[in-house]
Length: 267
Image 1 (cartoon, rainbow, N blue to C red):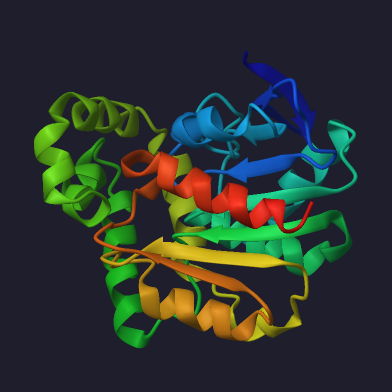
Image 2 (cartoon, rainbow, N blue to C red):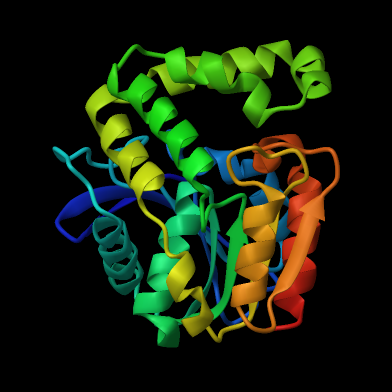
């Protein structure tokens, strides 16, 4: 299922999955920092029967190219634009999780004519000084480059205690995968997440938009989600009860259901 394409001078791994009943406009999915395209597996399993779902490993992640940093948000936006062009996709729905949601904001601002809709999942905008300080502390841990250290520090920020207790093998598998990240590329990407903020420009967005996050997400918290919702006119907001950051892993069917309902309103 894995394919590779050259976009913006980089080789990117991607998957292009389509069922038998297809909408005309595909859905492009962007993962979060330190992740890879397979974090969308559960969501795509629910959506791909009737919608073409396309996802890639971002630069510095998974099996995509890992150029030397520093990276910028503009780099990631340019990668997405070139990736879509390489696949011959002129217009699409765009959904981004965490760092992917920040990239999606940047892409929507730079290329609004390309988007049929925008979905922002567990992402960031308008950090307070205290929130900026906390994310910079997490960046410092990533910059130290100790494989797996950031994941171990973040397990209970990302997952609920109940999910961790019931899924030890899954948590171990994700910890092992996180430890495989290239330290320099991981730090370069995390710096983009930590230092970028597009809150002041979100009122420029006019495409149909969805904002959702977990009720207990500390880094991409409900306050930020409400701020994005307030600034993007006509947007739809969902706060998922009891969930933390990793909603794609812990509640893929719930996330897919919300996405399906939202996209059905904007075919």
